[in-house]
Length: 184
Image (cartoon, rainbow, N blue to C red; front, top):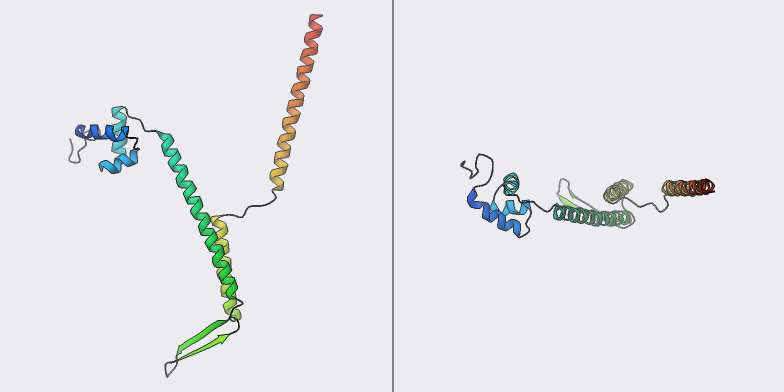
C-alpha cells in the first residue's frame, strides 16, 4: 500500500471495496462515487473494472443530454434578455436625456434636460443596441422561415427515391415476364 491508500496497481485499498460495491449497487455513477469516497475518478474506474463492476453509460448520456438542453435553454433566455436590452437602449434614443456636470473652479453642479440625446449619444446607444442584438443572435440564431435550398434538396431526394422505386418495379416486371417465358 502507498501513502495515498492505493496498492501498486493503482486500486483503492481492499478495505474500501465493499463501500464501492454498495455505492455502485445504489446506481451511483463513477463521478458521484468518486465525490462520495474522496477518491479520484481514475482510481474508482480502475478499481471498479478490477472488481468487474460496470457503469451504466446510458445514464451518463441522458445526464449529458439534460445538461446540454439546460444550457440551450439558458442561452435562449439570455438571448431574450439581450433583445430586451437592445429595445430599451433603442427607446432611449427618443426620450428626454438629463445632462449634468460637476466641477469648474467653483465646483458647482449643473444639469440640463434635453428633448433627446445628442447625436453622439444616439450613435453610442445604437451601437450598444446593435451589440446586444448581435450577441443575442450568436446565442440563439434567427430561424429562417423559408429554406429554399433545403426544400430543393428534399425534393431532389424524393425524386431520386421515386425513380429508384420505379426502376425496381420495372425490373420486377421484366423478371416476371422472363420467368413466364421460361415456364412456357
